[in-house]
Length: 62
Image 1: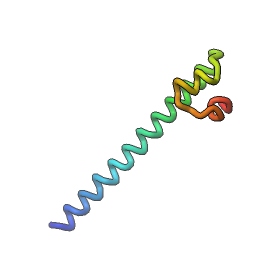
Image 2: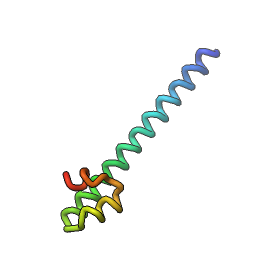
Image 3: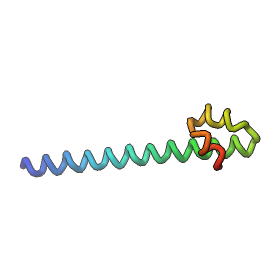
Image 4: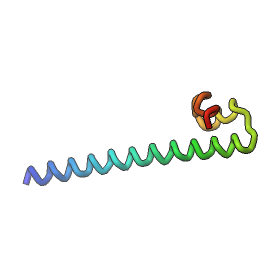
């Protein structure tokens, strides 16, 4: 019985780790998409950096 509880706990932990990693990737993808749109609209790099929290290099390299 203890082994089953341990396995269930490990499964929950792996699920939460995967969920959090997926959420991080989604947020990053959204930041990059927003920055690309801002750049296409002619916004200055400084504004892109301010509103997306990308580094200056990341914003310039889009």
